[in-house]
Amino acid sequence: MTKGLIGLDWGSTQLRAYRYDDQGQVLEKRALPYGIRHLPEGGFPAAFAQAVEHWPELPVLACGMVGSRHGWLEVPYLDTPTSVDRLAGALTALNAAGRTLHLVPGLRDPSRPDVMRGEETQVVGVLAQAPDVARRGCLLLPGTHSKWVSLRDGHVTGFATVMTGELFALLTQHSILGAALPPAVDDEQAFRRGVDAARESGAAGALSRLFSARSLMLDGSLPPASVTDYLSGLLIGDELRIAVAAGWADASSSIHMVGEGALCDRYLRAASIFGLTIHQAPDATTSHGLWRIADAAGLISTQATA
Image 1 (spheres, rainbow, N blue to C red):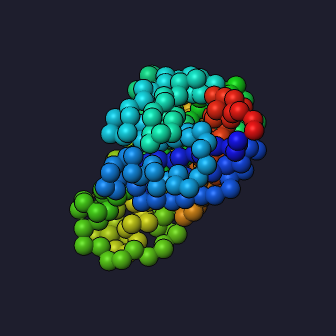
Image 2 (cartoon, rainbow, N blue to C red):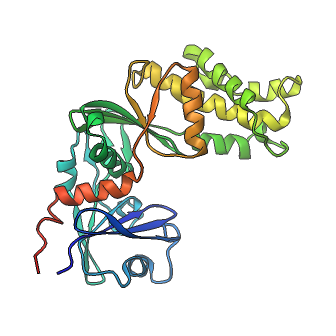
């Protein structure tokens, strides 16, 4: 019998599929435009069938929005603190075109309250590749809804969501601050000016400085094409100000950031202004996380041998 695993990262806009060998190495990847909001004719079963087409009969594990209220089957959240073993013990099985699909639950921090779905598997992927972070660390997952995750002794003890990316999109596309602006230029000085404004806002926070994006433009000290970078710096800077004020991070913290690209570069530049050190987390966190959860759940070790 062929041994290995099929892992699915099934989000709102995309479906990514991984086929692993019996050692956890990814042999083949597929990316389909079938997130839960954009399914093909035939819905979830049709999307699933395309994702695993011609792949062997292997255990299948999926994380992400496929297990949400608007997904294929809603899977209850697990409350923090939560370990990998608790996640693995709370998988929900679903019959999918003759295969058994196991769904990973999301996490809920009841103290806030706050929720995540999909990011928990990325966190597990970091812990699988960087065990030292598990002892006492902080993970930052930038994005539309950034996550700040606290780790202690291999457990996710809590987390918080900051809607930085979504606020940036709303302000630049649907507010007076972004109205009738020319195409943005890459203005590092404007970005740093925004970060400085957030850092200096103190207890008042960046909401008290948002309108400065317009007033600075009107008085001629901020070029219209630089407003976007200024707002980006202001919002990312305020996220870091919040993290410091809330005790999620400080100059002595071990902060590991999950992700790469231009957005993460902006967080690194802003962090240096705050005197924070952010380390880049290992790559391919979701695929590593799926394998680690499947292993903890016995989906791999219990397969029959030929």
